[in-house]
Amino acid sequence: PGKTRNPRDPDRTPGGSSSGSAAAVASGMVPLAFGTQTAGSIIRPASFCGCVGYKPTFGLIDRTGVRPFADSLDTVGVFATTVEDAAFFASVVAGRPNLHIADEVCRPRIGLTRTHAWEAAEPATATALDEAAARLRVAGLEVREVALPERWRGLLEAQKTIMAFEAARSHAPEMLTAPDRLSVKLRELLEAGAVIAAEDYDAAKVLVAEARAGFGDVLDGLDVLLTPSAPGEAPVGLGATGDPVFNRLWTALGVPCISVPGLTGPMGMPVGVQVVGRWGDDRRALAASAVIGQSLS
Image (cartoon, rainbow, N blue to C red; front, side, top):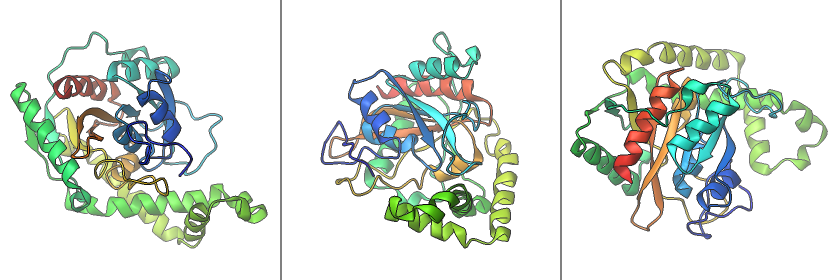
């Protein structure tokens, strides 16, 4: 947690850890900003602040010069006020003109998945997801429920294992020479990661690889998945940045994710919905998100 406050309500967290980027875009201070995601640090702040957050396919935007946290998870992404702007920004910085979707017209086939973490969904998110699906169906789009494979239930813990194991090693110099200059929360994570057995780390990587290989079967006959961006509205207080429970799975798989704004919760705070696409199929995921955004605006 940093000093940044939520531009929609200064008493609430903007999410994190890309808090300044999300708040700056949502408040109109800047039109575009970079973010990074290792668990949920783009999608969650975008949802809490009410802007677009785009976490590309792993590695699409080059990480040169970015201080590593967990090498197999760290992803550079962007924030913007519209999906089209996010796609344009990413197309330039990634050197991929095909991501530009200004003239894209599509009718995406959408799978609605509540994931294995649905018990963490607050009423604001449950209502938002149902409302989004209803609006899309009214717009004539196909939306059908999708249940994730039971084996995927272990992916949340697998992501935590991979993140902590790798973070402990990437931060070993700091832990050895200046642990007092690290926050308590970070030190606790690094200490936990340092005692994870290599066998457990390897098993987590295997589970992620298997799930990534089977992702096409989950999306069979569909273009994208629609799922929560965050448990609910931004929590009150600046002592924490919220729970990435609805982001860890997709970050582990490395697939493109876009948080689309347009809905609000009972306290009037933004509640985003998350669009998830196939590995490397960022253009389709962005185009679908633009259509979904139009239905929610």
